[in-house]
Length: 140
Image 1 (cartoon, rainbow, N blue to C red):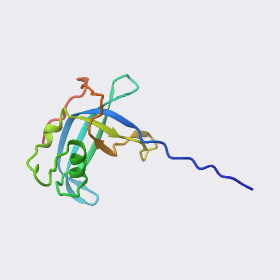
Image 2 (cartoon, rainbow, N blue to C red):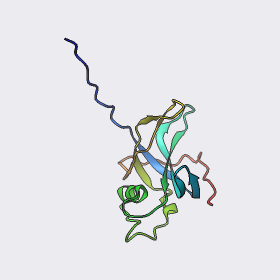
Image 3 (cartoon, rainbow, N blue to C red):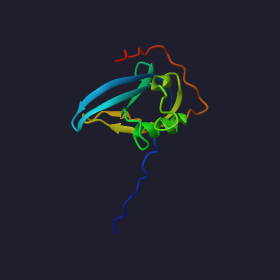
Image 4 (cartoon, rainbow, N blue to C red):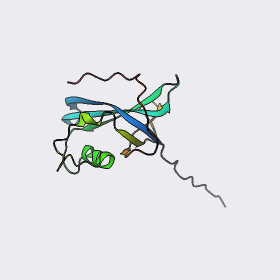
């Protein structure tokens, strides 16, 4: 009789981070149409090959309606409802905010493994101080 082994999936990586940039890309032409896009750049407590803090980026369609990924991420992370009572919140104020990222390993189209931000959560007990290595992208 042949037996098979069932392997549980690896637990997602959780990293402490600080938001170091919010990039408004404006309206971007994508394969499925033109959409306003915004990216959040986080400096983490992970180190790259050179010993510098690794930066991770999460990009969203910039639509603040109740069920958008952006609205849900901000609500989960900061407790703000940007589709309702906090609709005037300036997302650039996220720079400096602490976070805990669920960033399991993913594989790019070229076969390279990288941590992919799946969820932005409220900060844990560990605070990450920006290293000063990251240079903010000029606003549009």
